Image (cartoon, rainbow, N blue to C red; front, side, top):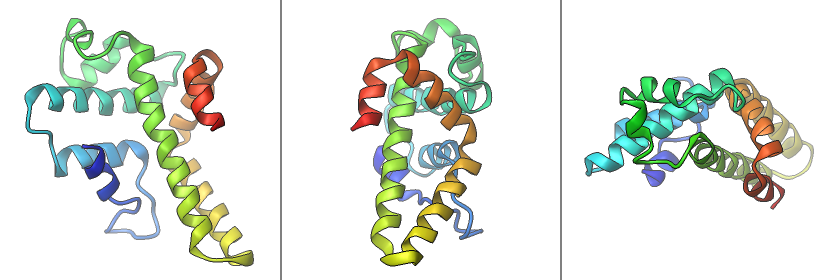
Length: 154
C-alpha cells in the first residue's frame, strides 16, 4: 500500500499544478492498489478515515467513534488494528511527515538558485493549502507524542 501511495503521484493528473492532499493520496493508493487481505484493507481504510478526521477536527478532537464511522466499522473493531487513537494518529502523521520531507527534498533538488527557492516556497504553500488540517493536527500531536516529536526533529 505504501508503494501505491508513492506511485499515486504528488500531483493530480487532471490538474498538474495542484498537489494531492495527503488524504487524497491515501484514498487514491487504496483505490488503485488495494491490499489483497481483508485485514490489510480494513487497516488501510482506518488509516484513511483517521487522516480524514484529523484533517477535519485535529488531534485534540480525534475520536475513535468518528474514525470508525468514517471507515464503516464498529468502534470495538478499531481496537483489533490500533491500541488507541494516539496509535492510529501517529501512524497517519508519521506517513504525512515522511511525505513532507520527500516533497521538500524533491523540490530542493529540482533546480539551483532563486528558481529552486521559488519552487520550494510554492510547493510548501501548496502543501499548506492542501493539508492545512493535517498540519494543525501534527502541531497538536507533537506536543503530546514524544516519539512523533523525535521523528519530526530528525
